[in-house]
Image 1 (cartoon, one colour):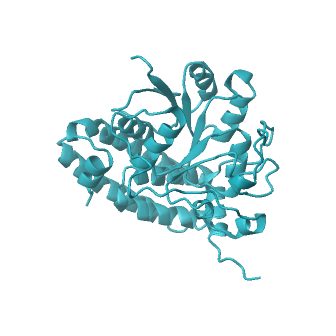
Image 2 (cartoon, rainbow over the protein chains, first blue to last red; image 1 turned 30 degrees about the vertical axis):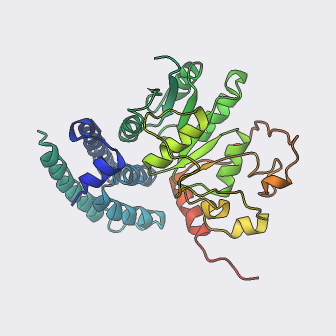
Image 3 (cartoon, chains in turn purple, green; image 1 turned 90 degrees about the vertical axis):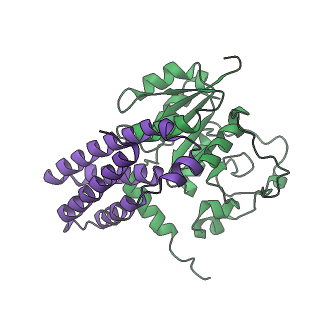
Length: 112
Length: 226
């Protein structure tokens, strides 16, 4: 699912040990972002929601977590068109995908 | 370390900061971070006295990166401090505004190693311990500025295509943007004594992600036929 080798070896020219802190930081930041996204959706705070989604998109693009980029981009595009209909469904989808990403990263680095 | 360069990263995503630090880990560079959210200006002013380059993200949570640059440029001490902006969207207005603020280049997100190091290398010298490609390498193209009119500029969807660049980075050079912002011109047309464009108080460009996305949509529209 996640192409660790192409990012860690080809892009970063790093070892598994060297790159591990970056993934830890990514996981922490994503968890915080998802919490904030959930709060923003409860509060119907669309500006914060858009900003957070934009940041989530950027972070995952940076980390080459392709599996999350498409659903986040789709959500973001809908919000720009003021389409809030499936917001909660979309959040759940992102949470679900991120939980898989987290497991995969943890397995790769044998974290936790 | 002797001759060690210092770079200040102004970016509020810990992931992106760590990513950049990782990319610079084998280079002769000390990386400083301006922290996150509020109080960035104070950090920048403090670190600004000792750094050789600032990498400035334009889309910060609490502050606008371009406003931070404007504030910094009002202080004569930081008037010539090299700054590279980091953005997902580089449109004409942004480039022109950055040029006025004497920004020396931009990096596109997501950050990519080659373009990231090349851009920094161009600004503060050879920072990498890894052998760099030279102009004589077969796969390096010699990119020249292109002459484009204002009308053509408005109709071109991709600023990189406009400038003939395939790279994710672009130096904002004197020869690419003329001082009165009216057109992008060929280097050969500029007199040798072309004066520097000075800092202005223009505050028209907020880097609102939603606005950027809309601008991209506009830029992606087909070029109307005459």
